[in-house]
Image (tube, rainbow, N blue to C red; front, side, top):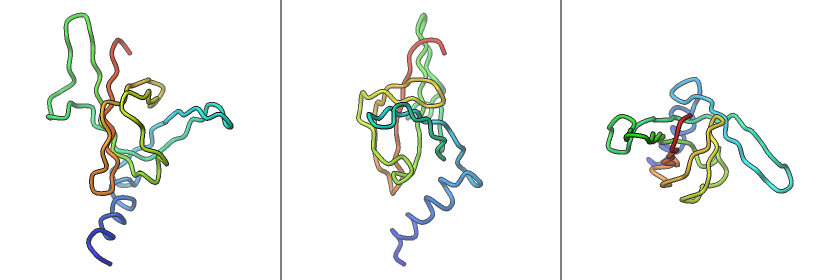
Length: 114
């Protein structure tokens, strides 16, 4: 097994494993043939800005940021930038998506009170 294969194996077995680092969070999707589907998926969520600062606040406006780390195989599709993403019942807007060493990194933002 080469290094990349071992890393991909570790992503699912360690990093995205709910018994190790990940937690189950509910992702809601809408499909034409299944309607509204709520699925608990293993993922790691950071509630910080990308530069490591705490959540942002501006007078009169609250901005909630979350960075979701999930295995591409678990989510089954990469979301698009500016698409709505429903996580644990809260609707976020996708601000960025990247695949970093076998882990899908999704940057989410929600404005307003929750």
